Image 1 (cartoon, protein in one colour):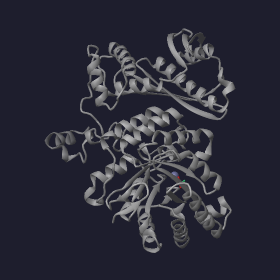
Image 2: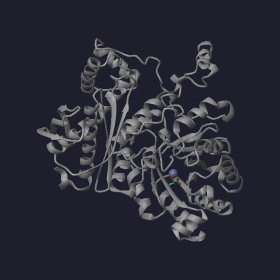
Image 3: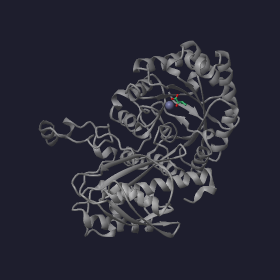
Image 4: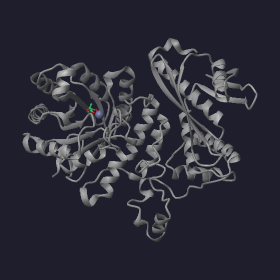
Length: 525
Ligand code: KIV
Ligand code: ZN
């Protein structure tokens, strides 16, 4: 059955709305925080991917959150996805969210309150009647600012049926246009979700005038299964994140939900607006920004998701791909040509390759990336797509860095004292540092501290290989902490020590951005 919605107009019955919360629920998980520039890059990628709604953040949470929601709203002031800001039910939260999203072409306020007996008693210390009043008041206030209001029953899947029906009815009467029932703690099984949506649609007056939405956490590994069960029971919006990131075990993964809907059209009879061939690129962008790769066997976007190892499977694949492949790798953005170019490849071929990998870069960025590619091609026998992705992502991450690594020499080995000498450019000014350390990486980090004195805690140092082989590029993640604030930096290079230095300096640059926002006076080292 089609439905009319203030942001989308008439929505045909088979269309599922994809509500992406990578920038809010996803970003909320430890180590996944992003700065403004990274959020804008992610927002652009999500819009290109075809997400219908971007939950851009929780504006009351901090000035930084407010700024990023507002900047994303400004970015999509003329057209683009619906831009949504989260708020609790307090008026000051709602007004802050309204202010943050107001410039978007299609703004949404998403307001929520807990409805389960446990949450109301232990967390809110509110009675049912007080919660019902808060539902009506919060939605009414939100509707005074935007036409598109979503209301969520936090811990909805553990809420008593009659009370959930009363809350949903109050939200609809007050003007909510989307009703979201989250499985906040990832406790539900698919039958629970199906039952709840069926029950609400049957019992609540006005249920046929709103979009029902499902939001599932993955504590039992059931987030995607619960999402699909909810769709089958009438949910028309799904809340999900790229790579399934999110609180604790994460949220339902956007790529899994979108591909399940597409691949099992015969079972679900639904469609989304997702450009599935952009999925891999978006997943990799998030991994680059956050420094967290997905596990190799992750559905759709893991390195092994389309790899066929056993002889029987390979034989079957050669005879007919359908024997072991339920969707093509190309349909989610994997390309066939893993071997790309060598040191003799020219700029035009490099630009074409970038285009095929989904990057549109300006002339200056192309020149810088091409110079880096030539350096890598000189050092590496073969350059794979993954190498190009790593170097371009590395390059883009560095565009606005105030601190840049310009030279690095390290001596290390058996029976020697590891020593590093390096040069940095800080706001255009040359700085030099020299230091010893317990190993080559330690000496390098000490030399960075000597060149640009600062006191931060090193909380994580992780190295991954971009491709196979001893000449593979290393991708390093460094997590730094200052005053309780965590930032992750990434760096890649065929030399692990250079990659480590780049990652440390990237994290340091992020800390400077954080300091600039909170205490502009503390901008010096
Ligand atoms: O999991 C949850 O309940 C949420 C709500 C704020 C929608 O993220
Ligand atoms: Zn959530």
